[in-house]
Image (cartoon, rainbow, N blue to C red; front, side, top):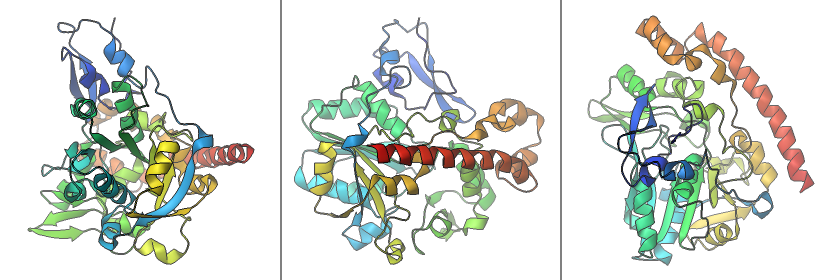
Length: 398
C-alpha cells in the first residue's frame, strides 16, 4: 500500500509527483502549501513514489571532511550588485555557460507575473538574470525533474539550483544517484519557506498588484537594509523600509512556514548539494565589502571544488568551515520551537474561530501578540546556541 510522507515532514519537493508514470499523484493545497495526494483509482502501487521521496528513502549526503569553504563574489560589478549576496550563483552559472556553450541547461527559481515562484529552465547566459536574487516563497517544481532527466539523457551539462530539500528531491527522482558527471547541484541555505499566502497578505496590505523583488541591496547587503520587498505602486517601483514591510514580519515570524521547516532534515553540516551558497556574515576581508555583497561558497566534494576554482567569473578567497557555521545557523540547525505555537499546530481551527483581522495581526506579529511569539523565539535561540557549540566542537575534532 502506498503511503507518502506525513504532512509534518513533507517538504513539497514534488519528486513523488514527477516520478509517477501513471500520473496518480496530484498536488492539493493544505494551509496554503502544496502536498501530494494519491488517486487510488489510477495508482498501480509500483512504489516508485516512495523510493523517490527523500524523506521516506533518504538520499546520500556529502562527507564533512570533503568540504571546502570560500568567500567571494561575482567579478562583474553589476552582477554582484544585482545578486542576493555576492552574486556567486550568477557568476558560477555564467562560467558554466561559457565552458559548455550550446550544451547547457540551468534550472532555478523564477518570479512569475502572477506573484508565484516556479522553477524554470534556461539555456544561455543572457537568461541568467531571470533566476537571480532571492525568492522567499516556495517554488513550484512539478514537472521540472522530468526535464532535468531528459537533458541528462541528451548529454547536456545541467546546473540545478534550489533549496536543500529540492536538491534532495532531484536526487530522489534520479534514483538516489550522485555520479552524474555533467550534473552540478547548487543549494541555497534556507531559513524556512512560507507559502504564497504570506506574499498575498503583503500585497493586500500594500495595495499593490505585484511584487518586483524580495530583496534590495541599494544600501548594502546587511539584512536590516537589504531584506525589504519592492512592489509595484501606481506603475512605479516602491521599496519598503524594513520596519514597515509586512512580508518580512511574516517571514521572520515563521507562523506560515511549512511544517517541515521547523524540523528540517537538511539543515545539517553534511550537505546534500555539490555547492552550498549563502550570505557570508562576518567572513569578508573588510566591512566595506558588504556594500556590494559577499557570498559564502562551500564546495562539498571534489567536483564542486573544481567548479568553484575554475570559474573565471567568480572571485574567491579561502575561508574556514568554522567561519561558515558561525555566520549561518541553518547550516547545523533545522529545529524551531514555533512548531508548538497553537496557530501552527491547529491552523485550520484558528482560521475558522478567529476574525480575519485578528488572525492577520497575530501572523504579522503585531503587539501584543509578539510577546507570546517571543517565548518560542527565545527557546529557539537558546537551542541554536547549544547546537552551535556542539557543531564547532565537532569541526575541531576532524
